[in-house]
Image 1 (cartoon, rainbow, N blue to C red):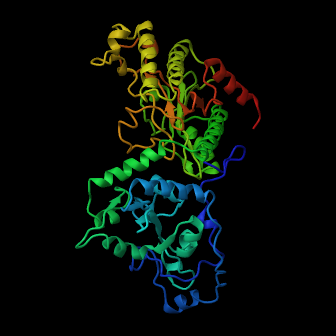
Image 2 (image 1 turned 120 degrees about the vertical axis):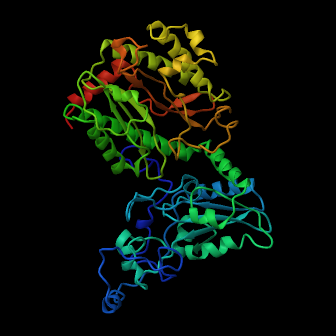
Image 3 (image 1 turned 90 degrees about the vertical axis):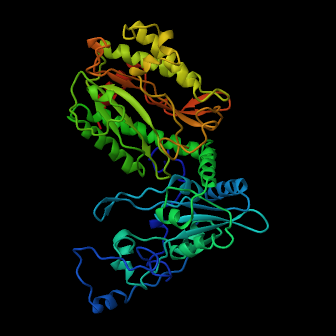
Length: 512
């Protein structure tokens, strides 16, 4: 994610709201809630007199007609489209971005583009659809379907709550989108249904759809087994990050570090997990697009609940605080980092014992991140360390070797999850990649994965000595596979016990 004050890579996209010409775009087809449909007024809206409508359509500064600049790194997005094209010659490929989702009644969640669509276009607007149309001479022609912008020539600019510019801000429109996103052609969304319907009939033209992103598109085109291969191909393309993607990840990791430091500075006065969440999330919104996932701010025994996002507990001195959080930048790449912090700045003896075991497991796992190793090798290395440590602490009542047997896996009572997943545009990136390429595949240079072992001792677990119950520890870093091994992108966030304590003390001693 770009747009961070100190270490920001150039963004992979530009904000359409800052790219539209002043006064709106030249007149096109009217914007509407659906193709050809009149936007419905809200139940609390007043009727608009014809005199007001006529007045609202008068005396606006004409649009300049000047086309916006091309999006930053347009050539990168174009190269990705060409790479996808080569995988599916002579087939039409349909990749929707998705739609706004209702939060309550007529209010919506903040829209976030579909990752595959954004990866291929850099476009942040909802409802859009990218089509790669095969050409007779080979290759594909890009057709991007976008929301038209009628400017001030149609009343929808002030009557349409969902898409009108006076309600939700400016957008590019058709010709402006073609120039901005560097595609071969743009068309208005009202033309989409007819285009897609033309792919089927007496002779069905071969096509593939990225499913699950747009109910409208899914209904228009019957599902085929070959659709799955399009999603797999896009996920597998995204497994290998290019230099620009690595820069974006470096930027969001740096921003996430600042978010963690905000949290540490707030701890002496903070009273609840929700304050921790809000403190981190402010950094995410100031420097990026949002958080990459729901921030986990788990104090005390809440840290033993893996995805604790209620964040409604109290912060108690002497307890640990597990913070699992990541900034999602304006280019939509996200960090995913976990640190477990002593709320009062000092680990107790028992906390230190568990923390240092988890850290030992993480370091063993990170050493196994190298090209040619199995994706699962870091996990195997971490689990061996955890099992031996659990036996040493008297928590496992069988030998580590027995607990590690494939048909037993008893250590998993205390460590429920594997240590790695891919990271990128999604926090759990490349999820549609085939298992033989991802989970059971080999690590390759350019992959970015998390390494995050943890131990979780529930308050009511009678197999655990009482002194350890309620302790939950996870340590997570974002690791780039290089040609010769790995690079820890989040190494600037301290991990060792003494370093964490010094980090916290130093921030508390420094005036903000």
